[in-house]
Image 1 (cartoon, rainbow, N blue to C red):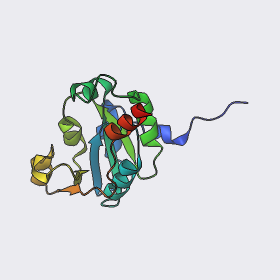
Image 2: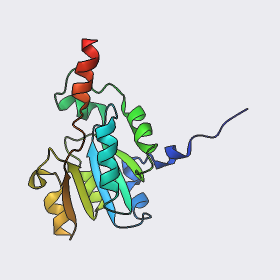
Image 3: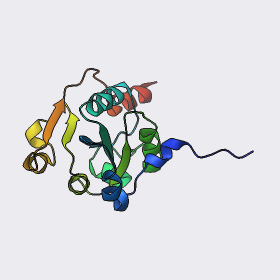
Image 4: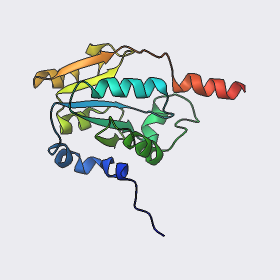
Length: 162
């Protein structure tokens, strides 16, 4: 017996298709980005809160090389991009998931032209990449405070101590 590919995999969008796919999404459009290496409660709470600000949400993930350049450790990311994309796509609150290899997601932001740009509470609004651009076309920018003080780095440290 053969089984169909999971429907969530259709949410994975190569960057070269992003503009066309976003044009089909309901607005207002939320955009966020990050590594999302080992998904935890802090991530999913933040993502659900971000999605609630609009109708559709695009999440852009750092490629493996982009994660490594962030200096989080030689063993990061733990999960490869293709796996992180699949896990992110499986979340109901995510409409599309794409990726970027640059140090910032500015190109994906310009391609999406989101109405709402969101990052986690450790980012002051003025320092969020794309803030000026999104505000320039009439959008809003939000830094959502963390409810659950969780991090992938802290989780990995805990695992290493076991």
